[in-house]
Image (cartoon, rainbow, N blue to C red; front, side, top):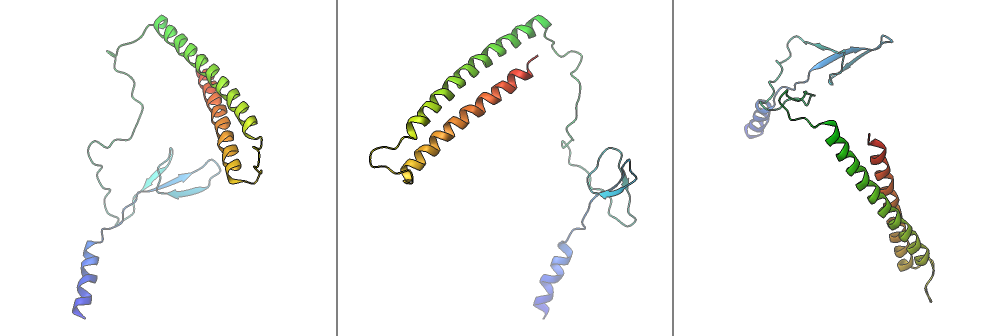
Length: 155
């Protein structure tokens, strides 16, 4: 009996009190929400008898926007425009190459969808080949879309 009580008592001593900050948030419709996640406009609730908040370890700060220091090197508008123009040309070259690769992948898919002599459409080798060729076409089309998004984001 004593040996069974010893592990139980040691577990009780090792259990740390649970800690969570509680926030109360009231939305524009008057709905009250209690949560452990802080959001703008929420008020922290102090519960009587609850343990004090744990201190954050040093060096662990929340990511936040901080403006560049005043002595941070700046780039003039002309230099930035030239860099943007170079970036645009590189992206246009990349999209042209991806479009050519997508066209070639489509051509390979058409050839690969043809049945070889003695081959059936249900054969594993045929299905694997067609699946691989379709995946290549899809990958090139996704690359073209991603480059188009990059081009659209340019100023």
